Amino acid sequence: MKTALLQLNVSDDPLVNLPRTIEMVEQAADMGAAFILTPEVTNCVSTSRAHQQSVLHPEEDDPTLAALRRVASDKGVYILIGSLALKTDDPDGRFANRSFLICPRGDILARYDKIHMFDVAISDTETYRESAGYRPGERAVLAKPEFAPVGMAVCYDMRFPRLSDALVGAGAQILTYPSAFSPVTGAAHWHSLLRARAIEAGAWVLAPAQTGTHSSARHKTRTTYGHSLAVDPWGEVILDAGTAPGIYVLDLDLEKVAEARRRVPSRDNARPFEAP
Picture (tube, rainbow, N blue to C red):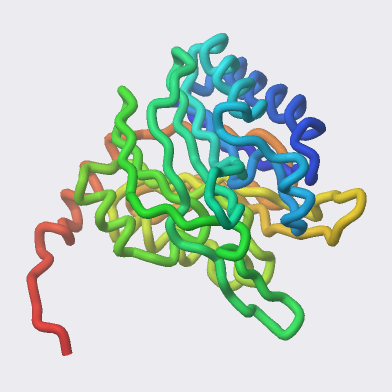
C-alpha cells in the first residue's frame, strides 16, 4: 500500500498553516498514496499558552480537522492527523494533544489523546513542561482501518515500550509516532527508539515529523528535528526524510509483519518472571 509521510514546518497561526497542509495532502493523494500521515501539532507549533488560547479551537469547531475530513472524503484516502492542539472544557484550561485517524468517507475512525507528557530538562537552557499546557490522555487506542490494525501514539510515547506492547498485544501491525521532536534528543535517540519499537513489536513504525525553526510573529520560536521515519518490522529504516519539509512516499508491505514475527517470535517466547 502506497503511504505518504508529510514533513511540515508549521507556524503558530493555524489559519496560515492550513492551506499548505491541505495542498500537501492532496498532492500525496494524487501521487497514489492511500494512507497519508501528518506530524504532531499539525495545526500550530507555539511556545505561548496565551497565544494558543487565542487561536485554538475545540474539536467540534477546529478548521484543520474539518478541512482534512473533507479532503479524505474527496480523495478517498485514509489520513492520520498526527495530532491537533485543541481546546478542552477542563477547568484548568489545559489543551488536548489529540491524534485522529480519518477514513475515506471523511469520518473519524479513531481518536487518541497523547498519554505521556514531555516534562524534561534537557539542559540548563532547554526545558519543557508539556503537562502545564496539555492534559494527558488515559486510554490506549487501537484503530481498525480496512488495511491493518493501527496502534496510535504520539512523540514522547515512543519512550514507553509498555504502551507499544499493549498495542501490539491488542493486534497492532502498524505503530504511529507523529512527532515534534527536540533537535538535541532527536540527534541522540530518535532513530534508536523508533527502530527498537519496530524490532520488539515486529511491526511497521511510521513517524511523520515537524522540522526546522517554526515562525512566530510575537513569541519565542521553537526548532524541531525533522527526519520523518518509516521503519519496517525487521528494524530497517525504509525512509528517512532528512530535514526538508515535503511529501515522502513509501510502499507499505504488510506481509513483512508476519515474516518478522515468524523469524523472531519474541512475544511467543516471553515468560513471566518475579520482579527483583
